[in-house]
Image 1 (spheres, one colour):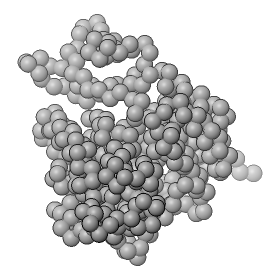
Image 2: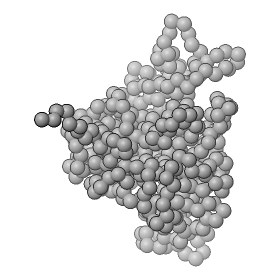
Image 3: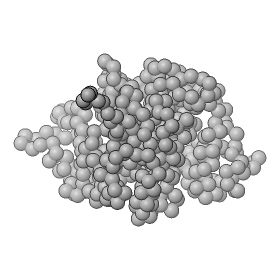
Image 4: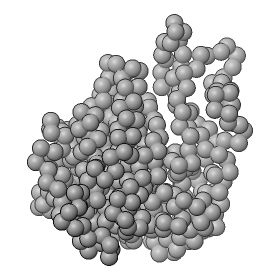
Length: 421
């Protein structure tokens, strides 16, 4: 009789309460991990701007997704949505007999007029800086209101889930691709993750897997979509569908083209091509050509009744940056400030590459525009690639596992994170 046979270990069910969609993911943990179930549902327009409607939508949809997915167990780990998270850098002069938590609380109250007793707060020490001749401690503070956190926990409990962890999005983003930084010396590699979401864009700079910078920018996909809707005189949902359709029609690498065996070693050419990050090979990976040879995709003519560009339309492609130049310029300005801040903190450690994740990263032209402006080589992150390759017939709803999925960085990172409440 054999005792102690190995058993499959399952991650908690990752729940990403996103601005654009509600995503659930569970992995069978291993090397590589395998997808147990992945399900998602789009957040309708009426629930995107109304917090009450969004809460009702999440509560109802979560029950349906749990029922339709093939999840194992009832343990869950949730992401605190970026639009409900405060990200703030502090440079603190250490005071004797006062711990760092107490000093951060004081900064939140005095500088930002925030009551720390009503917040869930985590901080991460970055390093020492010298300012005005005084040595200070650089700290990243991540905070969310207790009310918002408890609301998400209660939503999960109504779906009969046992919440064993809550995690912030910046850490989940890093964790989703942490397998690329496991070798000796990888802790010195400097990567800038740019999460192009619907409501916000997140910038996370890491040395290896250690976060040294984080910022949230209120210029993102929904802002692009609204500008397109206004320019084309169509509705929001129609403009969103048109943008997705145009991206899916963009020219890319043929399905037969095999991705590199070790993408972490793949050089990014000087033309700032967007390449795909994959843990292993995967078919049908769309990779954009270099900017120098980029051709505009054919205009979408079947998405909605009103979206049929006329010959006189100067920007028939809804993803043409000219359609949302103002918002994109705002995003670029903020990104340049982020890169400059990191350079001032770590002048000897320049950013080696950009990795784009988030649902908006599927719009390659936007990623190319950002990479060209920052003059840093870039790659498209596909956190599910390793797991999708190792998975056979995983139940999936609202997601095509045969296509790159940069928007699943947060759920993937949650599955691989510690269960911290």
